[in-house]
Length: 366
Image 1 (cartoon, rainbow, N blue to C red):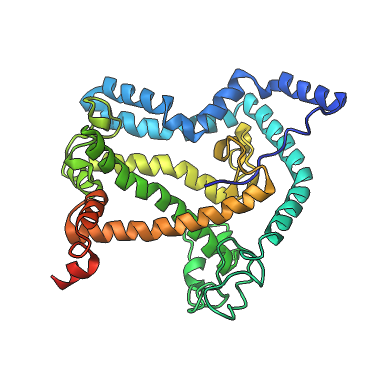
Image 2 (cartoon, rainbow, N blue to C red):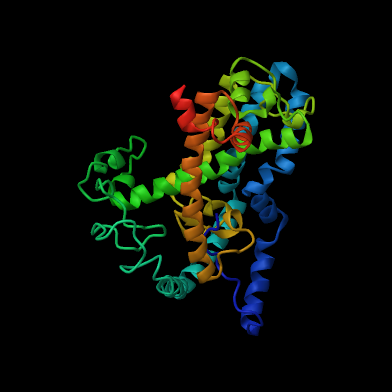
């Protein structure tokens, strides 16, 4: 998914005053080793590159007796380290820099919002009252302001006072009442994006290991790399290696309860940050522009794909389209697993080989 714009570094070839200000910022630690280290630590790329390799070696060195403790400690390390830095003098300086970045971004935000509005106006087929809708006369609460609004809500789930209002207001872990103050449509939009993004990760996560094992003939976790069989093997106490490489694992050699605890600790930080808002990382100098649904910055948009307003709007449309397809796809993958006891790739190959007999209707007729 392409996410929201980062704060601009300023127009190329700016005046000498701007250059002096930038030089001053650099001298104040913007590119210091500590700042660079914090950016690396807060980046998702860290966890799939050096962080993953380091974790694998550390868990292996800890041995079977302490592997579980090492996994939980590693899961807690990012949020603990970031919190520790925030309480130091260095954290104060980083927070001040993030505040300057925010002020610069806020001064540019109205111009970008106007450019986004113009980009949406240039897509009357997707936004506004004249957009394409699945049914004539869409309900009044769907006004074409959101990406992917096709005017379809026959049950009135997203209207204020509708059947979903009590559900979206139920937030037992929201003592400040932030969620309760959101509109029903706003809250459902957030939840749809959240589930869509998880589904876009889940579908390739379920299909790619099986496809690669079939294509390359490499053991990518045992059990034919079929997603639900691997999960069942782990629940039964099996030890799993990444890519079939003996000893190359982080949580693969620990029990299911340890994995659950590590996930709770690891996801607790991001979920708390999501609850607090996109300002949660500012105490350690990481400024996230945009809004809660489309946070940007170096963490979520390191290559600046959404700096352009037209690209930002197009990426919003693409993201929700692919996300909805992924949510439907994963429901299909789960239903296939229950019905055929096979993985998604094998099911697809079976259908391609004999579509007349390998399909949902044929399975229901059996």
